[in-house]
Image (cartoon, rainbow, N blue to C red):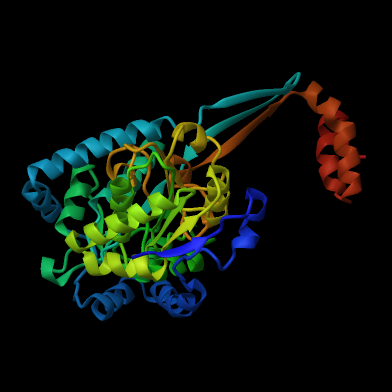
Length: 438
C-alpha cells in the first residue's frame, strides 16, 4: 500500500538534504503560481474594501453576504447547540494550550552592559491579530483554540477570526468554529475565506479593522496570500499539506504505526507520510496493517490517495541513519516509536514537533497535548517554528544610559561612526559629553 525506498548501505553522512533531494516524497505546492491569482485579489480588496470581499465570497464560496461580521446571536446559538462532550473537550484543550503557551512568554530581562548603561528587554504584544480558520474538507474548531489562545496569552487586545462561509450553514462559517470562538470569548468573527479574508485583515475594510499579525493554516492560495501581504502585515508560516515521519525500530507496534500513518493521510489527499525504519520485518507488518486498516477507515479514498501518492517506507541501516533521513526531510510532525525515544528526540535537529514514545501520537498534539498544531511544513522546519506566543509580539529594548557611561563609550562611537562616514552620529554623542559639536 505504500512505496518502498531502500537506503541501506548508506551511513548518516551520506543521507543529508542535498543527497536525498528528489528521493523522499513530498506533495508539490506551487505558491509562486498561486501568487499570480491571489495578487490581484489582494490588490482589489485594498482598493475596494468590503465590496470586493463580498464579491469574491460570492464567486468562490457561492454565498451572497450583506456584510462579513457574524452576528453575536449566531455565535451564542452555535455554542449552545454544540455537543456537550465536544464543548468539554474544547475547554480542556484550551486549558492545556494556555498552560503550555503561558510558559513561552519571555520574561523581562535587564542587562547591565556597563556601569551606568542598562538595556531592558520586554515582550510587547501586537494590538490586533487576525486569525484564519480554514473550511474545506472538514471543520477545524481545534484550530480556533491553537491560534486564539496563544494570542490571548501574549496579551493581544483585539482578536478577530475569519472562516469561509458555507451555504449549507446559512452563509455562516461552520457552527463548530463559531462555537469555539464563543467559548474563547471571541466576539468578532467574519464570514470570509481564502485570499480575500487575509487581504481584509491586512488592509482593513468597512467591516473589519486592519490587523498587525495574521496567523492560521490554509490551502496554497492562503499561503500565497501570506507571501503577497508580508510586509504589510506580520504573518506566520506558509503552512501547506500536512506530513508525518515515523522513526520506528523492532520494538514498535505495527498496528500503532499504521494507525498513525492513516490518521495523517486522513487530512488531505496531498498529505505525506514517511515510515523510516531499520527493520524490514516491521515494514512488512506495517504494510499488512495498512491493508487491513485502510478499508475500514471512513475517509479511505483520501487516505489511499495520500499513501499511494507521496508517501513511502524508507529502509535504513540503523537508528542513526533514520535520524539523518528525518532531519533531511524536516517533517512537520515526527513520531519516534523506538527504544529510548526521549533520548532520540533530544538528537532531532529539524522537525516542527516531536512525539516521543508509543503513547504520544500526533493526534494527541492535534488536540490535547497543549502544544500547538500549527506547524511548519514542506521542509521549512529547517528554519521555522510552530505557532507560539512569539508570533503575536515583539521584544522591545529600552536603553538607559547616564552621562558618565556615554562619555566612556564616546571614543568607540567616534571610531565606528567615522568608519561609516556618519559624522552626525558622532556629533550627537559629543554634544552631550563635551557640550559642543566640534
